[in-house]
Image 1 (tube, rainbow, N blue to C red):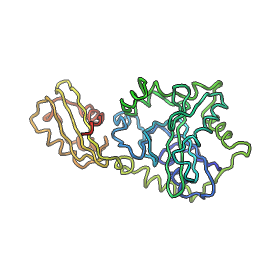
Image 2: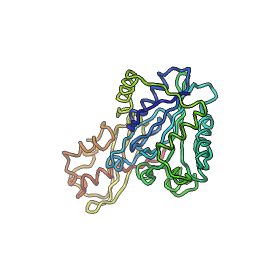
Image 3: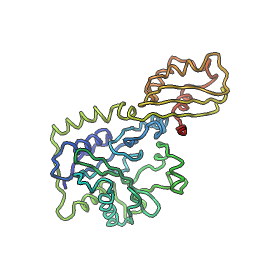
Image 4: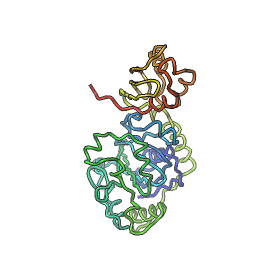
Length: 337
């Protein structure tokens, strides 16, 4: 196994591109280990609907990146207190879905540091009832990666603010909230250390007595990684447009306007239809406003552009535009029929 140095880059677009590039382009006769730390980001699972997973208003207000990854599984929040790891290997027919092959060495390293970590369920690492790591996998053309998060010293309050987590998922785990379910590794360390020291100890344990061997990336490699980051991971079509079709709604009472309900039909990240209901009084038909949204990407910037030239008062009464935008981006999925 060889180590890939990501040069301390915290841009999630680059780090996910580096991981994909290593999977597809580095010599397949070796295994690789990659570590990376991302600045505040939501990393969306490949098969998820982005709009359903994020609190768009909070994400926009706090400059949080939203990036879709290649692997399946659920959305996760990354920040500078989260260390991600990725094992890149051959897909030998016995490793994909075998999360324990990759998580047990990590749990063993944590135990060596005094953290009583255990591999639990399908793809988690926990200390007692508290989750400190979730994992996912991806395979293509005989190669695969198994990657995961390690909550070292993350802002756990932001996890709950940035993500929309299914109430059903929380109920199924018998707990009250996301915040109560997860924990930072620093809570369990017998002695303090920085995340850099933590990464170094983890790496030394995983490589063992033979020591760390590095795979040097060339300038040409980095140029191709940058190109992949631009082409895929910075692309709206990838991060939002890959979302499956879904129907969403929100309902809220506005002082001076009454109760307002919006329903959006989204397809490939774009608004295919919108409709407003409620007990508001308007001199103009709200269907006219709804029609302005048809075909545009469902993101705050594009919707805000539509509203720049719109006076909302004739449609709904006294509703401020920023408040209205918050309303449009605090949606819940409608149940399937």
